[in-house]
Amino acid sequence: MINGKVLENVRRQLVQRMENLQDTVSRAAVRMKGIPDNQADLLDQAATEHDRALELAIRARESHQLREIQETILHIDRGQFGICVSCGKTISPKRLLLAPMSRLCAPCKEKTELHRNHQGGYGHDYDTECGNYAT
Image (cartoon, rainbow, N blue to C red; front, side, top):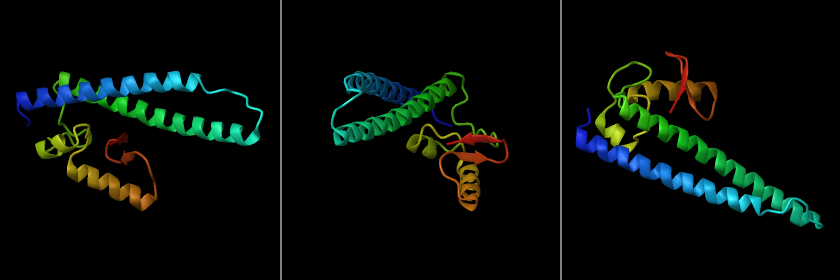
C-alpha cells in the first residue's frame, strides 16, 4: 500500500490536474460561444463545423478525465484507493504511482484487455467478473 505522504502527494497532483482541466474547459466554452453559427461561404461553414466537432470531441474527453479524477479523489478520501474494483485485491503501488486513476490490478486489467481484444472492442474495458466498465 502507498504510505500517507505519497498518497497526499498523489491527491494534490490529482487536484491540480482537475483544476487545470476545469480551467481549460471554461476557456474552451468561451471560445466556442465566439464561433459564428452561419457563414455565407460554404467552405468557411464546413471548416467551422469541423472545428466545432473537433472541439466538442476534445471537451468530451476532458469531461471524462475530470470524472475519473474526481472519482479517484473520492476513492482516496474514502480509503478505497488502490483496491481493485474487480477482485478486491491491492493494486501495486508502482502501478498506482504510474497511473493513479487505475481501477484494476495488473492481472485484472490484462484479463479485460484480452477480452476486449478478443471481442474487437475499443474504448473502456469491460470487466467480465464484476460486470463493470473500468480503466
